Structures are given as structure tokens and as C-alpha cells.
Amino acid sequence: MSTLFNDTKIAFRSKSNKQLLQAYWLFRLMGFPELTKIGTYFIKTALKAPLGLKKVIKSTLYQQFCGGETLPECEKTMAELARFGVFSIPDYVAEGQETQQAFDQAMFQVLETIQMASRNSSIGFAVFKVTALGSAQVLSRKQAGLLLSDAEEQEWELIQKRVHHIISSAVEAGVRVMIDAEESWIQDVIDELAYSAMFLYNIDKAWVFNTCQMYRSDMPARLKKLKAMAVEKHFIPGVKLVRGAYLEKENKRAAQLNYQSPIWSTKKETDQAYDEALDYCFAQGIALCIGTHNEDSVETAIRLMKKNNVTSNNENYCFAQLFGMSDHITFNLAEQGYRAAKYLPFGPMKLSLPYLFRRANENKSVSGQSSRELELLKKELRRRKNS
Ligand SMILES: Cc1cc2nc3c(=O)[nH]c(=O)nc-3n(C[C@H](O)[C@H](O)[C@H](O)COP(=O)(O)OP(=O)(O)OC[C@H]3O[C@@H](n4cnc5c(N)ncnc54)[C@H](O)[C@@H]3O)c2cc1C
Image (cartoon, rainbow, N blue to C red; front, side):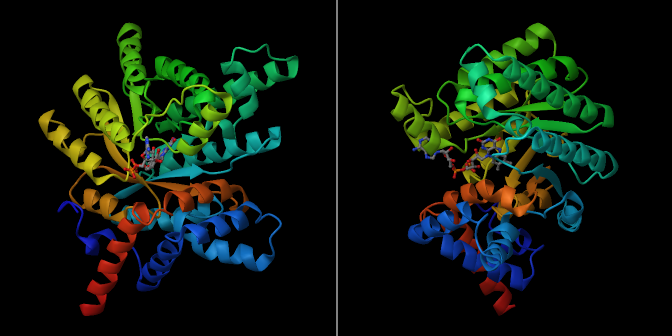
């Protein structure tokens, strides 16, 4: 492991011994693929599950990866992160919702985040998913160029209104806002919404950040297109760089519908594209949120900051990891003066299940993320025992 991140005392200083032990057992359990499969089945059916099971999920997965059911419930965690120089990006996670009421509710939650962020400097950004604000089906039909019914046209109008209401409120309140990336069959529509918002608002600085998933083989070209558009239309581009969370879903759909998957065929190609995108963004002055748990990419970013004379506290560049993961990166970065953040998911437990399901699956590979987390947790538990 890089010497930059190997100080586990700093990495886990916000965690009590009990919290460390709980995290240790959770990552151990997630390291058993069969158990994760069974757990995932239960998570998916937890709506109908008995109260006991819901309690178990709440005190394990939910507690590890979410800040609370409501924004005020997250305040304690946000204050704890701020104490160590880490800022929060509260993220309302309610996925798979389909009613107008739920879409409005999601918008109000993001607006509440913006209000809180305008008063609380430990909140770095507001963030939202477009599919939390409107039907994914309408977005998909729109991208496919299909004729929308009157009802669908109305829904599309509502989606645009909600997106613009959030972004204009954020800019008015002096709060930056990020738009999450989703599946490729709706992402063009999301990108268009983001580009038009950047054109409107990113004049004096990058208020709006769109997300680029570097596991997509067309993403280097799309990034260049964004830069060209920014030059032509005189706006400052802002980008959150991630690798991408929907790999299996993307590949499965491409195979089912018999088209070429938009995803690179190897992890190595994704890694290379990610690091080249970092290089490109720094060289081209694109404001960046570096969203990754990959230590090599974080080190590359730090090297590029130095090469491009970007100071560690430059407000146009920050690092972000998900709450409950890679504390060794976030807390050590903050300790060294970099702008480091945690994406802090919040929302009712039953609506957070798809998010938890993605985290459990991401951590199920024994050779992957969970083993990294486990090794660090073990090291810190041992250190505390001996000191
Ligand atoms: C702050 C933050 C915000 C995020 N926001 C979003 C978002 O808006 N949208 C989104 O989709 N995801 C988002 N993610 C999740 C992200 O896309 C990744 O799934 C996750 O961070 C794991 O990638 P990594 O860079 O941390 O590290 P690594 O563990 O090094 O990489 C794992 C990733 O590599 C890619 N990969 C794995 N195997 C292959 C393969 N065989 N071929 C090609 N590529 C492969 C996949 O993208 C996989 O997730 C976010 C993550 C963070 C930390």
C-alpha cells in the first residue's frame, strides 16, 4: 500500500473500537460471495421481511454505508467528519421510485441539503440523480428518439423543471451541485441537462459538475467534446470523474439486445482511461471531483496537481470517497491538507436498499475492495490492542 495512506491511526480516528469491530465483521461477511448472494436476496425482499431482519440490516449494512434516515439525522456524522477536516456531500438515496409524489419528495430533500449547505460550510456539494426526479422509462424513450405520449411529454417537462429548480436554488444559495451518472441508455439525456445548466451557471466558477464514467470506452471523446463546447460557449466545465457503477447491468443489456457493450473490455483499460482523463482535466483546467477508492489513481491525481502547480486547497479540485469505504484515503488526504469529502447517503432504509445492494456486491470479491478494507481494519485493531 502507498505510504500516503498507510496511517491507520489517522484513517480510523473517527471510529470507536466497537464501530471498528462491527465494520471488520461486516467486511468479513461480505467477503463470502455465497453469503452476499443470500444477503442480497434478503435485502431485495426486505420490504416484506420481518422486523427482526430489518433491524439486522439497519445495524449492519445501513449503519456502515448510510448517514441516517433524514438529513438532520446525519448532522452528528457530518460534524464528526468535519472535526477531521473531511467535508460531506449528503446524497438522498431513494432509488426505483415511480410516483410524482416520490419525485417531488426527492427534490425537496435535495433542496433541504442546499439550505443546510448554505449555512454549514462542512457540506461541500449538493448532489442528485436525475432518475430520483422522474421516470427512468421516459428518459430512456427520450434518448432513443421515440415519440413521447402527452403524459410522457408532461413528465419530461416536470423532470426538467425539477432539475432546474434544484440547480438555480443551489447557485442562488452559493452551493455547488453535482449530477450523478447513470446507465448509458439514459445518460445522453442527463448529459444534455447538465451541459445546459453549465452553460447557464458556470460563468464565474464551476457551480455545476457532471459525472464522467471512465469505464465507458467513448468517454475520452465525450470529455473532449465537453471541453470544446465550454470553449465555444464560454463556460467553465466541472466534472466528477468515476469509473462507473453499472458494469454488470451494462454488459448484460448489451448481450441481451445484441449490441456492443459501451464498457471497456478490461479493468486495465478502464484504469488507464481514468488516469488519462485526470491528466486531461488538469491540463485543460477542468474543475474536478476525483471520485475513486483506487489508491493509484489518487496518487496520480496528487502527482498531476504538483505538475500543474495546483495547490492542495484549490477549491476547484477535491477528492471524494463513499461513506463507509476507504477511510484510509479520505482521512489521510484531509490530514495532508487536500480537499477530501465523503459522499454521505441518507434516506429511509427501505429506499436505500438498491444502494446497499450495490455496496455489498462491490465488496464481495475477496481479492477486491473488501480485502483492502479488511486488511486496514485488522491493522488498526491490532495497533489499538498493542498501544
Ligand atoms: C464519490 C463517488 C461518487 C460516485 N458517483 C458515481 C456516479 O455518479 N455514477 C456511477 O456510475 N458511479 C459512481 N461512483 C461509483 C464508481 O463508479 C465506482 O463504482 C467505484 O468507485 C469503484 O471504482 P474505484 O475507482 O473506486 O476503484 P476500483 O476498485 O479500482 O475499480 C472498480 C471499477 O473498475 C471498473 N471495472 C471493474 N472491472 C472491469 C472490467 N472487467 N472492465 C472494465 N471496467 C472494469 C468498474 O467501473 C468498477 O466499479 C461513485 C464513487 C465515488 C467514490
